[in-house]
Length: 213
Image 1 (cartoon, rainbow, N blue to C red):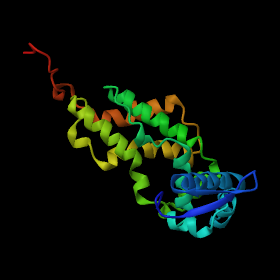
Image 2 (image 1 turned 180 degrees about the horizontal axis):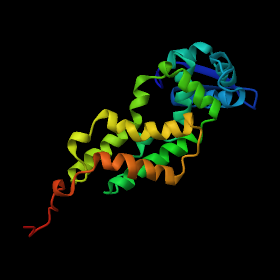
Image 3 (image 1 turned 45 degrees about the horizontal axis):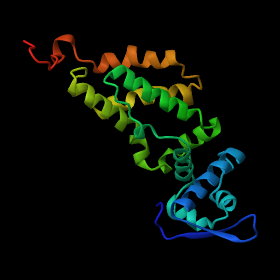
Image 4 (image 1 turned 90 degrees about the vertical axis):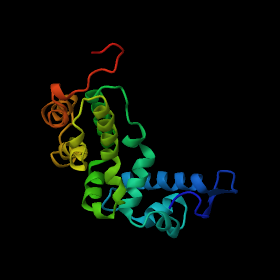
């Protein structure tokens, strides 16, 4: 539950008066406080009570928006970074578009302290289900456009294939705890993903230019 819930909170200001927060201003304050709290105390010690106290808000205000601490921390992370599905590239080149998305996701991962990342993984069932569709949505959009250009086999645009690049990157960063270098991202693309989805040369569409035989 986000802005428009009707909640209002009073918070002290330096002048000794009080400032009223509501709607987006309140949500921004709650999410900023939650991120500050989890990065300060660590995921294991993070509580809704601590986040509410840091925000100067009632605990019930948090629970009306985010029912679990995992949901709150993930929302705070999304508030801090730009989700990959909000900046889906469209360069006209399949490899470049997917590489840009993977770099974006990698940079987002770098914003997450290791203990927070592993805490979220351990409580993945408490994270809203649609969170796990963010990257597949972006990859599906890229594949669909590429299929229209004849670069991709349409039958390869499936949910498991759309999840594959992100799953490999997530494994490298969170489980193997290794750096996802540009060379690693290139390996994902050139050795796994592109061979899986690419149309054979004789399946590629002919350019739609005047005078093409």
